[in-house]
Image (cartoon, rainbow, N blue to C red; front, side, top):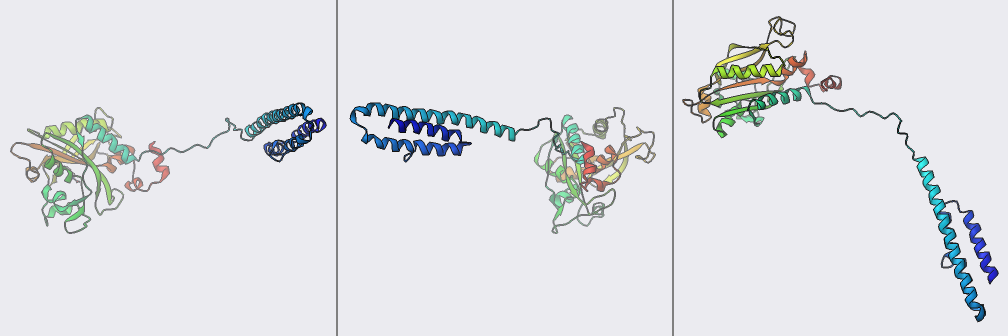
Length: 340
Ligand code: PHE
């Protein structure tokens, strides 16, 4: 019996020696310590051991089990260390290896212009208000003093959805909606998309506008000129920028003006951008027609106001020297990348 136990220990030792990985080790564990393993079969032999030898043999068997267990533990420690080292070696990353650069997107030039313009006007005390792109004939035309079948409708060709519903041709209907919902003093800017069936180098069927509206007691053309000149100085980063008002016509303003700004490229000397005039036309504006105030529920005897509207794409073209409006809608990455 003593011999048997000795052999058991040395067999276990040998088996562990040749265990190359954890699964080998497991097989050894089962073969020696498992339910039907070698140690169990030795234990079965205990019944044949004479009683006086039993304590000694029992002790030896226990020692043998403890010894085998500790050999296994030791081997386990070695194998885990070895496998971890191998894994680390296999999964090593070279932190000096050159990575692939992820391209960062950028804001669209029109978005940049909108954000900049809204920034300027909110700094001047205006709030931003949006309105629907599908409008009724009333808000887009009638309330703005453009009656049905009036020749003034020819100024803005229109996409009609039904007899009464249309894609708004300008952001001016938000003027009316604002005056209906807010009491003066009013100072708002309304950015948004507008639609007209035009398509060439300087016109697109969809484009964006920002409309501005100020209504209070005693508002005059001087307020309009002052605000717009300050706006032009900030937008074109030119503290010496001047504005020039030219008489014009809009059914919703009276008097109406086109506002020119000192050319941002030549500062008034005359160049390709301003076609030699030194001035660039940037927006339409005027004193809100008393009829529009009345249509919007504001007393024209008490209040007056000014409004202006400008095209975002046109401003982007002027600011960034973009020759064709269609470039703004083609989404050519080479073009868009330049506005980072
Ligand atoms: N709504 C006009 C347009 O789109 C622009 C404008 C707005 C003119 C406000 C004067 C006052 O042409």
